[in-house]
Amino acid sequence: MKTLAGLICGLIFGVGLVISGMSNPAKVLNFLDLAGSWDPSLAFVMGGAVLVTFIGYRVVLNRATPVLSDVFHLPQKKDIDGQLLTGAAIFGAGWGLGGFCPGPAFTALPLMSTGIMAFFPALLIGMWAGRMAPGILAARA
Image (cartoon, rainbow, N blue to C red; front, side):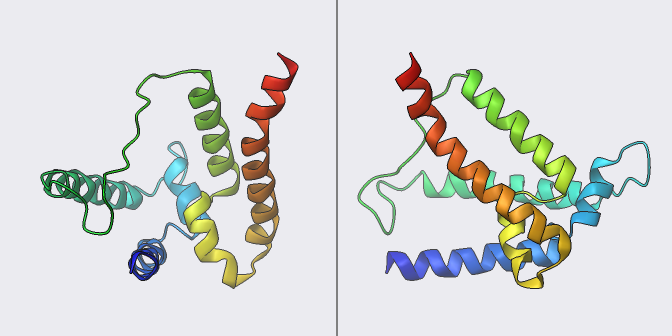
């Protein structure tokens, strides 16, 4: 049941990314281009997502337990450290250069455009490097 619920949620999320234009790198880059051909429409998409998330968390966390699990799996770490800032900077640079972030990149993959075919391998390498870096740094210390 968890897998089916995850699949349905993923499909809804993916369709939402496509409908909103988040999987169109030109639209994303126009949103980020404040001094040029700025397109503010994605701000409404993000605002809607924040509103839905805010309400959703309030409703769900009022329950004693989740519907499909025994406990809530919420982040425990609340401090801002170098790893968080480095990851955010790399994510932002990739988003600004390529016009994709991971979710929309997956939804754009079936289009096989030149942009996604260049971005997606870099995404996979970055995900691999992000998993390997803590072990490599710990071994050096």
